[in-house]
Image 1 (cartoon, rainbow, N blue to C red):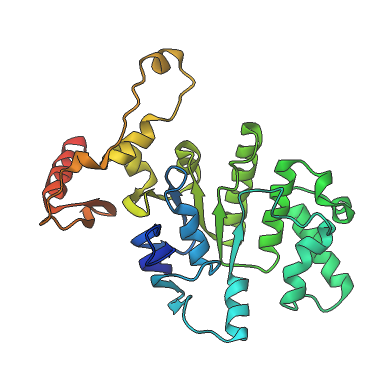
Image 2: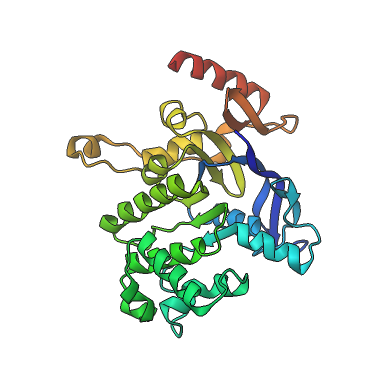
Amino acid sequence: MDKLLEIKGLKQYFNEGKPNMVKAVDDISFDIYKGETLGLVGESGCGKSTTGRTMIRLYDATDGQVLFNGENVHGKKSRKELMQFNRKMQMIFQDPYASLNPRMKVADIIAEGIDIHGLAKSKEERMKKVYELLETVGLNQEHASRYPHEFSGGQRQRLGIARALAVEPDFIIADEPISALDVSIQAQVVNLMKKLQKEKGLTYLFIAHDLSMVKYISDRIGVMYFGKLVELAPSDVLYKNLLHPYTKSLLSAIPLPDPDYERSRTRKVYSPDVHGYSADDVVEMREVAPGHYVYCSVKEMKKYQETYETAR
């Protein structure tokens, strides 16, 4: 598979150099391949949303590189280059209520990107594209003349998806796109995203804290903890052979619709002290099995490899 994005040593520090400095994203590296969905999970405040926002230049990176089709996203760019980049990479935001301008009609919200990039030669062509996008996301033409407050949360998120699709992007960052929705609506939105990916050849970074939903949509999953990427593996492999203690803690928190299981379920609490690192230990992402990376020391890597082989 061809690489669409390469993230190399990405850092995003807030209040850098001050006593209250926050290392929101702390030296992480990973690749995203064309046509895949990479899930990024972790508890609130772990840096996953900041990672997505830094990738799309909503934040300037403190250090590191984000290479999109081989070009550095955070390098010096002309207005024309920025326009081309913004068209190829789009974002679906977490809050479907706050992300849509309440004073704009749906047609203008969706067509904003079309207008900026000059993708329609006439008003007729502009409206035709808007109608097509509404139908693509499961809405209808009559919705074009309405305002955001007239829609439910699930419908608003569909409008957010339509707006992202309007400029025909290659890559979409979905920042917890279903966390503000009812459970009954979440599956509909995820199924829509999967359908669009298949039809349009899209690549996704799907950010969430719900491991069960991430497993459903993702080809590979990365787990973040306090700004660090601690485990990265194909979706099915991660669930069968999860290795890092923090990943085990996350998975133990997932409830199942089984009363007997829930009565006996034990939540595993993660503490960084469990590793017992010394000053001489070099801790970094290491490939413990083909395509399965864990943030660990050399000693831990050997232990993880033994565990992996035993589980096969």
